[in-house]
Image (cartoon, rainbow, N blue to C red; front, side, top):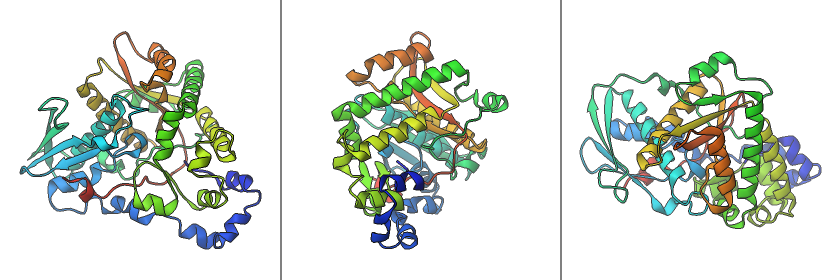
Length: 366
């Protein structure tokens, strides 16, 4: 969650708390969670090909930034990937579908990064069934460098209002190989309504909201200590924390100023969306979900190459009971009979946003 200077100052009525926090400029310059962002700077800093590729793979997009990957390097020239089930989202992602998509993003980014050193990666998905490893990834020589790698370090999920201008037809054509791109004004308006209504269901269902709040990291110290989940940092948000406006208790109280302001901010963001990207699969097996993640990662890199912003807004695709009506609506709108809508994302021109925190590679190796 990010918040602008104007909005923050409005909430705290003039910003007097900022001065109390240690002086505006000095306070602002000390709020960056440098430790949690270090894996971005360390990416590529390994000579061993698997570790080098993995140092980029850990930067992949994933739901709630749970980073559910664990890898075993015990076999030469192979990475064995597992899903860390302690990072599951039982309320918003009860079947671990979205987490599995995140693992697909991880695998594809690993494959792309490995190609930069001439290494091919052959994947054997679920070699022991769903209860075993997600994949055996065997490295060998002979790959050509994937040009999408050039955009790995600039990729972001942009959770901000997008500019009020259409995505050009030429860009839509370029993205069509990766996803269905929706620009029709009526269809876009319908999806704005759907994504807003679905977000309200997740937010106003106590157990799903609590799952998100429990994963919020409030301020620099919490983000550095646990660089996963939903990071809420920066000078102005920390100012609101000092003022008691933003915090776990406030985020769980629909009557609080912080909760209500968050709702207003999110609505404004969702409504400022000129286009959408949709990924569907013929079925909904684990392998379909992994494939959707691989495609979503490539779509992310392609949109980055075009100067476009992308953010997943997949609440309507969640499979908990209270979301059933919106889940059905999303599939009527976006899928053919029998297909599963795996990902829905906002697409447009947005501002440059900060990198997301990450656990160091060493903490993901078992």
